[in-house]
Length: 323
Image (cartoon, rainbow, N blue to C red; front, side, top):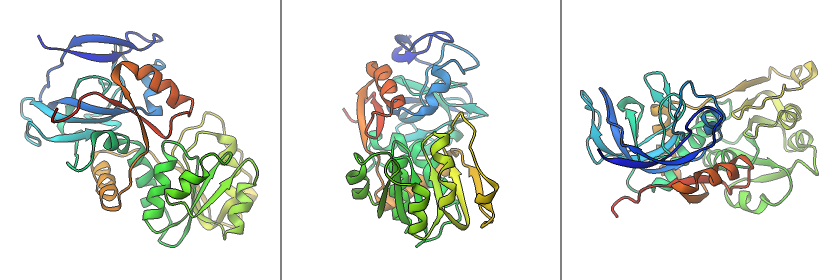
């Protein structure tokens, strides 16, 4: 039986372990992927910290791979196709949480959960677009903002640096909000028109001085920072949250009297939405800035991501296509 290398969580509460296990076989409407790359995302912590309904479990839901085998009745793809998968794993599954994910040389996926990856897009650049890219792209596309409107991105990390690019490419007047000035030069190079240092400025006041934001997209999971932003909205605008913060937001009724303003969340999409985000990324040349790690250093890469010390997205390189 063919075997593969993988990063596995053996049991709830146990650390990740580098293992060699049998290659899985696709069942009906499934395909087997030879994994090229897998992005590391905050959502991986659900399985890593004990949230999976069953163990052992292989995490990872920003996966790019090549179709290696077809399960019974699988007709959507052919062997050799380059495909990707995000959080939603098909058949009500979550990739890397309720079914095994992409921290491995091979993985099984439901055919309807996959999207097509353009040949001109490298696996390393495509992987973060499966979740971080699609999440921010769809949140902005489905927002109230229109070309020329002021849009602010709170948090310039793995999600935020992509959101800034999408906002600028969509024709929004783009404001980046982050702590300190160490990211200012880079984020202005990526397309932000303005930068607000939330340590030295009141971000809500600074946004009002720019005319007020039609949309504020909160990408950093800090409830205190998010709560301070509501005053920066223009009338009839919205604050959209795409990063979960455990604490409660602190909002005043006065913040909404000039409205109608809205605070809402936006979650990651399915294969159709991922494909649309990919198409826009290719058309406008939106790309993630990444740090690359081999599979055996997955634990190190994950810890860097959780500590927000990655610039800006960590990706596991597992198989180099055409080598």
